[in-house]
Length: 79
Image 1 (cartoon, rainbow, N blue to C red):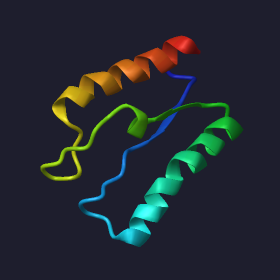
Image 2 (image 1 turned 180 degrees about the horizontal axis):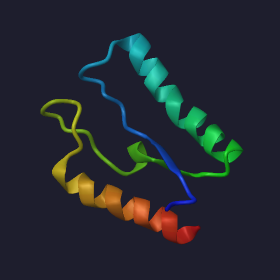
Image 3 (image 1 turned 90 degrees about the vertical axis):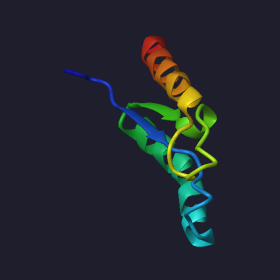
């Protein structure tokens, strides 16, 4: 049972989105941050931590997966 929700926004998917989609995607971290504050949740912006693969533009690079997991764990520990 978790009493804390972590909201996060993934990095830009520049290889697959058009300009309009990218503008919407880039606005998500701020919106998620505000929502997290309103709902008294933790927020972690994944784009600050992970790198999206240059190969497909969608998946997280292998070395970023552990960094992302550590960032989530640290966010939980902080609070």
